[in-house]
Length: 196
Image (cartoon, rainbow, N blue to C red):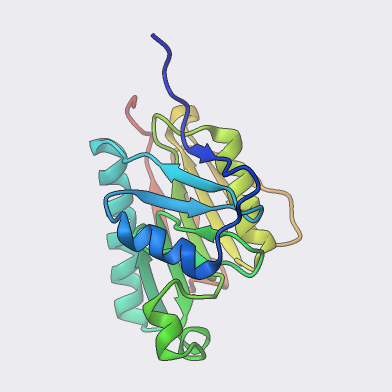
């Protein structure tokens, strides 16, 4: 029995959905986590297991506590799809947008898929995720204007740090991550992960 490799990408044979059609596809299928890459290919993301979901939640809690204290911006969950300037429609496991940038969006833009690159994104590799595809997604974020990205890779006990105009920084776990000048005074201790 072969194991499916995720995410699943659908080639619609030259049929490119408009932004409104893609929005309706997502809204009409709320049980599915759907993304779209810059080439217009529709991507179905699998649900995560308990351990990955817990790691995602714990990281969001830490980010949310920091943001509530600092009040510098807005935190978003993995249910939020961002319409990236580079052409993709992506939903990071966690994201943060600086307050003044978010406030430049119209009310309608905030209600749908916000047309903005977050300042910070976090992705956690689950057991079914293809590492190369996740790394490509992280580079897409940076190419679209994200200023800091963290890719947690529990399988290899590593975290990859992405910044514009720099090669990715790979650190072994355990480590403590700094929000640098993006998430000022935010630190996230990352322990060794148990086997997924």
